[in-house]
Length: 173
Ligand code: S3P
Image (cartoon, rainbow, N blue to C red):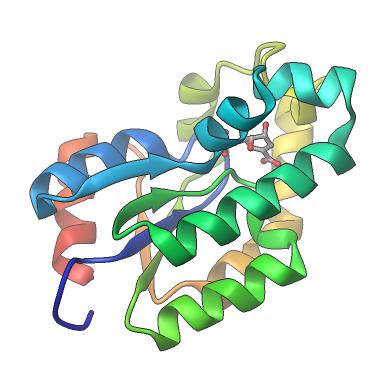
């Protein structure tokens, strides 16, 4: 990471602890934390789950792309992206530019067994309805190569407490 305000983006699947670890990391670094799901909800005036149901996934992805682009360009600090954001090509290019500019991209990796209790697999996860566990595994398989390609740091969050994961991320960025 280059001098100045630390800039770190957290990527990874639902249940990897991006928001919890992101907040702790921001505290450690003395910078602000931001979450693109929260940005999308603020813009849309409704919850992510509701956007999926009422407006559809393509609309959510459009709002997400805009939220990510804005945050990457303007937020000095720690930023957590929604689990599927990295599958957008525009976002991939923006993340490559972010790294070229000295930012760090951290892949928070997790197994299904450890993601499950965090996710809860309830109805507030629109992409995981039906058979949530199978769907989570399917999405993770599809997205893993992209998480790995874009990340400059890879940390497994599994059974460790979030404070410890944040400390490891801190040491790596
Ligand atoms: C999604 C993950 C969610 C949220 C939306 C879609 C995904 O964010 O952006 O429900 O495609 O995996 P989290 O990864 O923070 O749960």
